[in-house]
Image 1 (cartoon, rainbow, N blue to C red):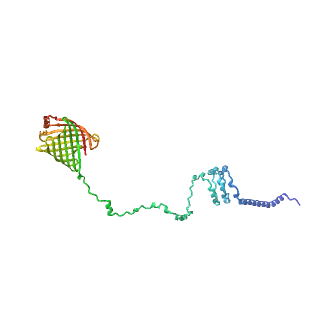
Image 2 (image 1 turned 120 degrees about the vertical axis):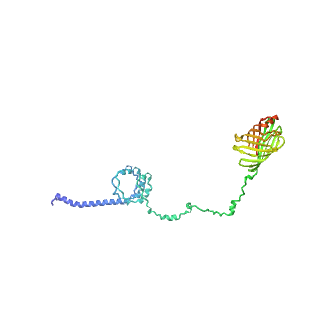
Amino acid sequence: MAAPKPKQVLTMTTKFSRPSLLALAVSLSAFSGGVTLAAEEMDHSAMGHGTMSMDHSQMSHGATKAPMEGMDHSKMDHGAMQGASGSMDHSQMGHSQSQSQEKAPAMDHSKMDHGAMQGASGSMDHSQMGHSQSQDKAPVMDHSKMNHGAMKGQMEGMDHSKMNHGSTEAPRTTSRTPIPVLTDADRQAAFPPLPGHKVHDSAINSFFLLDQLEYQDADEGSTLAWDASGWVGGDINRVWFRSEGERTNGVTEDAELQLLYGRSIGPWWDVVAGVRQDFKPESPQTWAAFGVQGMALYAFEAEATAFVGENGQTAARLEGEYDILLTNRLILQPTAEMNFYGKNDPERGVGSGLANTELGLRLRYEIVRQFAPYVGVSWSRSYGNTADMVRDEGGDVDEARFVAGIRMWF
């Protein structure tokens, strides 16, 4: 047999090698499929991935540009990653770097087992995560899936008796305790009959003033002088009395008493009428008296009295005094008195016209309002025919005296 030519050898080789190559390719394909199936059926739960402490600090996750589209998560057991995710240190991972690079394509979560990740999410530390930096608004909560109807049974069993729902009630317009109807007996007990109003002017009052009870240092010797007045009655009608006199060296030289009826003609003035009885000098003499008395402007007290005596004798007297308060208790009191006669009466040593005047100045201190000691001076002078009669008897026409005494009232 002749040896085959090279071209024939190559042709034969090709004919024999094509089935062999095809068989080799089928074998490799079957082998790769078996490896893949073994990988899919491999149980990773028994592997100690939870104990693996992988150091991701050196990994540049943000630099990865290749998409993960080909990864199939449907077969991954995410529930077994609880231990691993709890110990992973994400603080060193460059996740923030991915913001400036190309965004990764969206991952397909439809086949992920999210229910198995509850345990892993419970152990995650969210305090370091920048949730506050997120600009996307949270999705609106969907209440349609909530079982609100299940709450009705719970609220029906709730005890509302302890809740303060009564504070919203309208205010009461009636008393809780009914008010009894008023009767005539109740009105009479509340408003008993009152007695008639008492008229104050019908009351009987009295007043006594010892204006002067004093010692005088006279030329003829020591003299005791007095001047007193008072009244008894009401506000309108009163009975007045006045008395004044002197005793020198134990001998009464002058003494008189007036008893008058007074009637008020105004808030500050009275008219008076009555009798005057002179006991000294010489024989007693009776006079009819009438006049006015009261308080003039600026609390100036004044008296003006006219007298008609026996045998047609007439007389008139004017008196006045005024209190000057130096302090509430220290009071300076000036006084003045003038006497007039209608005709001469030599027996009593008085002449017609202005017979005499007397001026006084006394300073008193009210220890209490009802009692006050005082000191002062008194000056008297005679005029006209009266002065002539005094000279004929060897007396002094004018005389000044030092006085000291007490003033009291009740």
